[in-house]
Length: 609
Image 1 (spheres, one colour):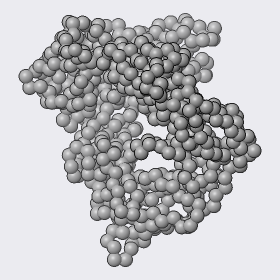
Image 2 (spheres, one colour):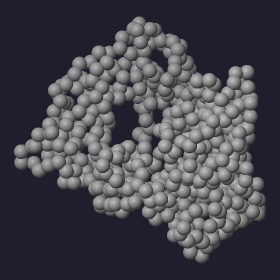
Image 3 (cartoon, one colour):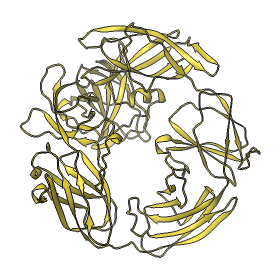
Image 4 (cartoon, one colour):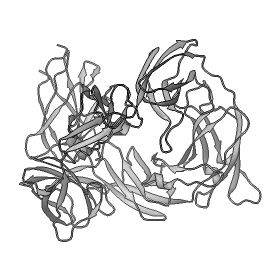
């Protein structure tokens, strides 16, 4: 029998590095926010709460009907000056009742009853807590529908239809690309009409194709039901034979439309893995530029091989594409000016950095100009000049440390580069992080900040580079009992990613300089690893963690190097049941006690079978 090794790991937390637990869609709806999840009862908060109750209504194409089933629903709650968190509560016969803070705003993230998964109409909107204690939640539930697909003439329904779905956050191109973990085949060679249903609205984008036509992206309305129609434009096929004349090739093969629509990006297709023979089906009729190149490349830099091709309706275009040697470049001088408004302090404390992003060449990856090398421009208040004698051509991220501002710039291979910058005026925010129980000052290992709406902060000035606020790690300066950031005078977001604590975020929306105290909640969690002798064993399946008493559950999972940390909704005894591991003997269930506010680390030995 396996033996269990346990040790408290509050002092030995490893750096957070991602998510690994396979979760259902329902779990993703409320875990994806990175907010702590609390049960509807058993809250440890000391401030007053009041009951919010109501019913769930289902909006259908012909009207609204009350839900009658049982299930659960999840609220997201934001209290003034505190972290955002989630609360799950039960639904009985279409009605709910939950205890929420007296002063808060809330979102309804999701509902699940016997009628199905419900998507609230107000799900993306923060609303004040209703003063009368009642709130009707109106949801929509995906319906089955019929999809009719017509050809470019708009009259004839097509046969041999292929449908692919892709995770929407990766569906940026007009063509779906090869099948992989993000891209799944839904139908192949089926005739119109197609019986269709979408069980995960907003999660996937769908691509439709038929021979002689172009791939077409659609996002059908999953709540409409009935009959939905679409039309495919004419298209053709591209076949490319690569001829390897040099020692290497580009990291990607790309197809760009030379005459894109006004609001469309020219890149239509991209392959990160490709052989000597490439076939691309379903390209819309038009003229294209194809290339073997590296992912980040200034526009004026040559590629390993490129050509111009024309795609005709219902035809296959074939060509050979030679791949030459990797290009060689020479450094250029660079310089310009920077305007530093009052508030940033002495420019000696600033550093202008250039981090090269493209993969060309072996030298010149990092350049910097210290503030002590800035030269005041005569007659211009707070304006300074900067200079670098040699900079490698390439694609760069240019940033000013320790501000939050950076900009993407391409440095070309000819002439003198001149770049002028103007930093926006800053404000100072001081954050003191404390243990929410003891009040002791603590210093998280990873505290990040960013502008709440970075797109709104793009600051363009004539003849200067545009800046935006990016997510930045907030360093702690030794000897200080707080964190200090210098950022734009706009709403800011703080995000905590330290495995000793529950993940949390905090919004600072007060204008001007600001000081705040942020109580952090210690994590109640299990940290588990498998070990065969001195070797760590990777997870190859789901682990089940079940409370022996009460309704404790796993609220999120984190990957911490060799360990996986499972955050729990409440303390208590938990039984861990492990998946079957190929090549290893079965692992007996383990029962572990997890105290409140502690992370318990267990190392489970496994034996080869």
